[in-house]
Amino acid sequence: MVRLCLEYRVLRAAALLSSTVLFATGCDGFLDPFPDAPADNTILDGPVEGLTPDQLAIHLVGDEEFGRRFSPSDGAAPLFVATSCDACHPGEGKGHPAFNLTRFGRMEGGVFDQMKALGGPQLQHRAVAGYPPENIPAGATGIARFTAPAITGLGFLEAIDDATLQALADPNDSDGDGISGRVQMIDSTDFIAEIVSIEALVAGDVTGRERLVPIEGKYVGRFGKKGLTINLLHQTVQAYIEDMGLTTDLVPQDLFNVQVGNFATDTTPDPEVPTNVVDAVVFYLKTLRPPQRRNVDDPNVVAGERLFEEIQCAACHVPTLTTGRSEIPQLSGVEVHPYTDLLLHDMGPDLDDGYTEGIALTSEWRTPPLWGLGLARAFQGGSAFYLHDGRASTLREAIDYHGGEADGSREAFRVLSEQEQEQVIAFLESL
Image (cartoon, rainbow, N blue to C red; front, side):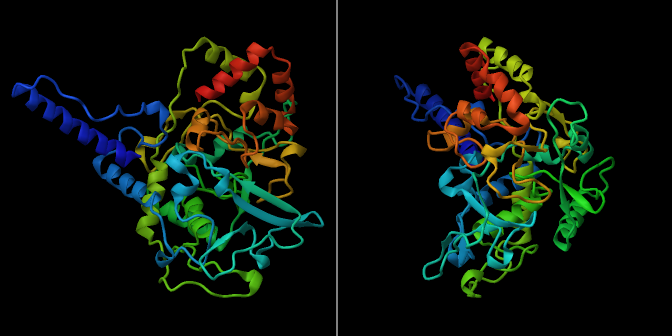
């Protein structure tokens, strides 16, 4: 989309220049053949403000790679879910359930087994011709389907200090408000240690940086439906291998279907996605701007925002956060409005699908950012699919699914007048 916008501006300038020449030579008029560009607050991609020319060049390379469609000859084999990042994140927006990720596992004696010996935790339900795709194995007690989120503004969420998230947490509900968000904590492994080492190398001598500091041997998780990944590099390489079947330096082993004991890979040399491409995609994700608000001065939107806070929705969907120090100066010390605390919250039995990751309970989910919510349906084919798996088709239905720690807010919404409920919806649509 960024490329299209830039090309549009070039073509538009050329058209204007042509019109000047035509008028100067005595033509009666000039018909502009180009449509108006979409308003900035109706699209989700675009770089953060103030990137240098060198930064913008890397951003555009990452944009190109994000839209690249891989074929089996490129290494997208033998198992996969999708063949491009754009397939799951169309227009950088929330995905369509047609490309939902399916994850599964088994609870045994209070311990969750990701069933890795049977291909878990993620199902690759597509495969190249002649190769068997995976099936959910017998014995799985938890099956979750994840709709891919919008990816804008992620660099700002990554730049929020660990201490900020810890300060928002209240695991024992010490204030008695019924809300007890927890920080997801990820065990340190050799793989995680390498991710942390690379991040430290990238950060260089950035002083005052307070992220990826081990806490009793664990790291703060902040991305993914249950906060399983610790930063955008972690998220990206996991997506390459688990979603597209593509190897990287950090994950060099191809997928294969262990369910049939077929250790077949592909003939493409590994890594199939070189480090410079991974780096460009990660930089692209870091430097995508946050979504822009719409209709902020509408009286109903203003009233809905006030009600949103009064019924305590903002206790989890925190409106304002401030980033810490970042190796990308444009992301440092910035006040942003993502409407999330990035914490795990118990959402009650209706959203408990028996699956979990990290320390999260099966009923716990990371608070999703709400910025860009009002644009979701535009990137999902004209119909909206809300919540972690797209099960809700309206915002009212999504609110009705909120239980557990959100039960009080749900009930407070239900007792609002019809007009007040519509005002809350208008506010959410403005995000």
